[in-house]
Image (cartoon, rainbow, N blue to C red; front, side, top):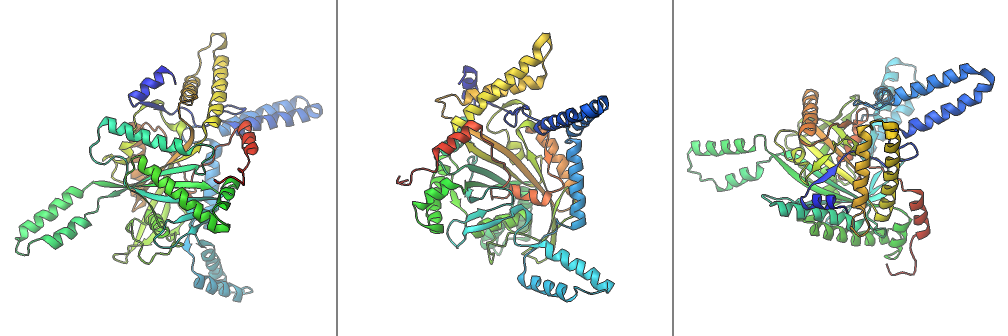
Length: 558
């Protein structure tokens, strides 16, 4: 590593932001626009012999329109906004955002009713048929945020292993660990740095090519303080002869201490892709699903040991019922986070209604009172290119996780893909060469380069230095998400603006990308199930090496 980077690490200061993807033929961004221009040019040349100059003029106009439609702004491109509006209109028309937990008896009754009235001409029955069909469409086994999720292991008292097969994505297994967190109480700067380095060592240790674990998702749930334990203690220890003013005084103390106070619950989710190498390794542990479970038992033990070594304190794998309870609580905060009583692991969803462009609306029940409750959720993405390029300490997210400026129920999570050092080093070298060439072209003839080009060059150079041979570092591909929750639409709008202001002023996140028009599915990106990250596309050389490496030797003991 360079002397500058070494000095920054000694001070516990790092630089984040400035770039969000590897360079391709068209650079870091606008790859679709580049290929679109190529297609327009090809079509234009095809028609030039027949139509002459008019074809060239139309081609230039088409290319200009494409650039205008795809140009990125702080509100996204025109094409992205039109796509979101169209998606919302279709969702409202089809009511595809509605969700009801699957009820086999209700499904059988509705199916029979539709069959019996198939040839009806009565207007009233036709209207009823439309509602029955919509209710059937809304009744699904899993909510949109957990599409294709089942269980490899869901028995009581043992780690729950979720089996995911989302549409359009590769299947994988995930396990959620409840951790007590790295920082507890007052910590010295040296202790904070040591624990931050411990997390980095955890990721680096699992990023090697031979590791099956490829994705890690830290999750922090921020909730209002619960005084139930203190109230229970008072009920069991208060002197019956104590005066009423003393009892009321203690009640006032509890109310004052909990007002505006937020507490955190921490989880870490580990994910293992179900690829050929996983299947080959599992065969050494046994046949079929039994081999998968025995292999996962070893992987879970290894991950638990790694979390402990990384100073995460207590790290206990959640059972399937425990994971389902967390998911249900994140949809309906009226449910206690650890309420697993009479909960089936397959019951992952709370009733929800669609039709909202910027919210996921859940209609649940308060288990204590039995009353109907309504919760509004909104999710935003945090991307690397939306971070201001600045020096940051390991505590740069503290205002978002703990800050008292935001009295909002929220979940903050980051999905991290682990990339072997050899692949990350090769990609970083290519990015640096591409950015240096772009900067040289911009400065040719004495022109002043754009600031964005200098930022990309600096970021690429830092990344290449960090991945230098012998540094012990590996590559990562990451994205963050934050979901906020309110009890009304008006409050959600206020909280959205408060979150944007906090992120911009205190966390250096100058843009939150709200995932509007598909918020019901976006809610699942902050659940402890490993959803929300697109795997990094390896270079041609990396793909070739993976093919040559094969699945491993069958004769090997491990």
